[in-house]
Image 1 (spheres, rainbow, N blue to C red):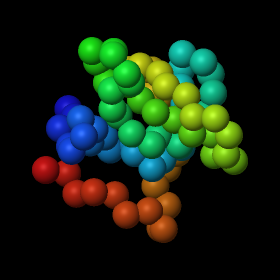
Image 2 (spheres, rainbow, N blue to C red):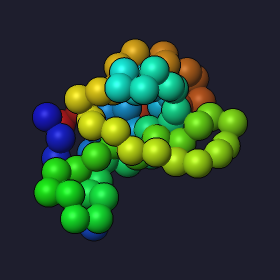
Image 3 (cartoon, helix red, strand yellow):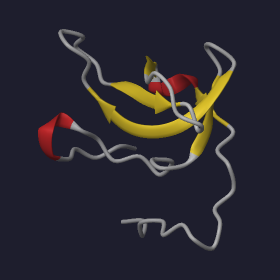
Length: 78
């Protein structure tokens, strides 16, 4: 379950990891779970790994995160 952060951003265990957007079939780095304009629910903000235009999707469409590597520092579960 997500917890609230500042500026209406929410924590998510996959932030900073490459994930699949099942709604589009694309992969990108999960940058944030946060509102988008006037939408009442937060959306997932993704960025293509090689750069490019960020896009949004429903957080429920996120799947298949890349494995954690030694250079990643996952947050402790609370």
